[in-house]
Length: 522
Image (tube, rainbow, N blue to C red):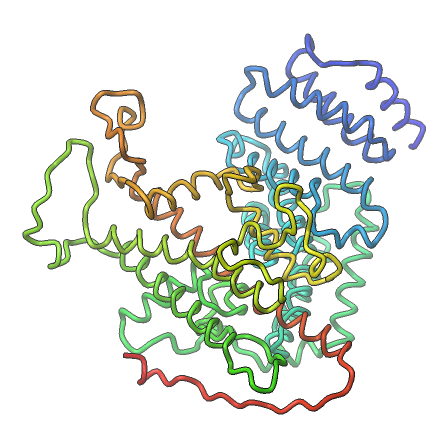
């Protein structure tokens, strides 16, 4: 087989370009060169394949072919990742350009209109590969629904099942609540078992090797917990979700959108996760230090849950609020959307986006980074020198999976100075926030083409967006803010465990804090 692969590689590398080849032939050449270069570990072949992808992208391809080119690019960067990360230590590098390129191109493939025209197996591969990369860098909260989307397309897709099981297992290891961890281990066991079932669908030639890896993961879980006992003792559904119908509807929506500050909500819309119980882990601080970090985390939680309610109200509002009555506004003939509900959605967006810099403020204090408080930003807090991408010495040696996930979440934000991002929509999300805070964002019930084209009737001062599109983006920002709070808590838990191992003697006096009673929240 190696001889055949080498022969194909040699034949393909005789060609400097795919210009002049029919589209289908050129696509086959690019895909084949990526595959054989990966098998042979040939970086020169990967570089040539990326060049061919650039040539293909300049053609007038169909939608499906454009999406496929992005998938090819992601695979080529995956090959680069394997070549450059052969040593285990390299897996813990904070900056990994190859991973960033994979995430970007897989997202571009997913968001292209041609994605829906691809073969369902290819769609599953794109979703699964994206989930794998998000999990690798520590963004497990966002990886889980990505694998689940692959399984929604093809429920027996083995690589999604197995990697979902692995991700759930890793999430369980990161939790500070041992009871929650056991629930995650049981869920991981179920997914790994499904991946090893006879009906599981494997599309790769090395399926036996993959199966053996999944089997080892399942055995490791069985050695840690009594899976059947956990399943018998834990009831995922049937828990109380409120007194009134309105409260139940709200909490059901939060469960469906995975917006509870509770890792159990990441298992799905089960009522066991319908409480905002995420807190900071136990941590050690100076004897005379008040519970400052707990107070700060309380504030971020309260802001998050309030923003969440504002967005829910905005979505469910179907009639004018009395505060909107007798407010004289003029019809500007571009289908504007004015109401308290719209302003609530805007407030939700603002609050959720503001949490990112507040998380950075928390990290700056907890990790003792000593960054000037006027320069603490979520996008740049990680760097000693942002323009040169030099990670801070305090962080570079930490093998802290959730904290690295927080760092990589910052890569989904746009910064005018850094420019780059792993999210194709990052610049628009930043622009919306900037217009909300500093100038003029205009939301429309209907956004007709003339409103965004060079038309004399276009509102030249406004950044225009259709109402439902804005709601979707507000929901996305809220989901990412939730992920940031979870990564912060779990990253702090892992760091406290590291610090406890390195601590030399000394007395630790516990501080007991009661819960703030719901009746006191006025």
